[in-house]
Length: 77
Image 1 (cartoon, rainbow, N blue to C red):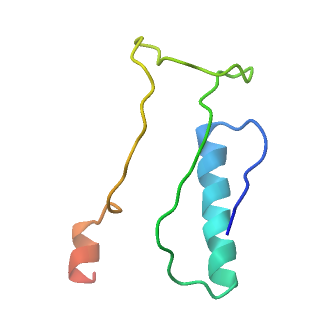
Image 2: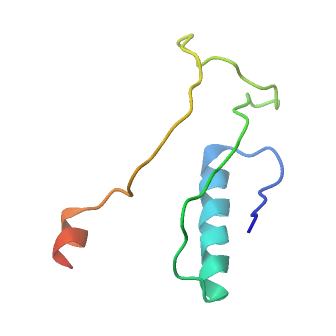
């Protein structure tokens, strides 16, 4: 299944769009997913792709193994 998020967006808009996409999955009755890949192009406010971060560090791939779980999540609070 592919989910497309079109256009140039700031990270707050990206977060909202991802949240909306997950809500749409849940509305379809999808409760579980296995693996997901998000490909994006980091850009400046004009849409020019960035090759390096502001501190001149190269942009690298990112892997998130598990979602952040709070203490409340762990104890069902």
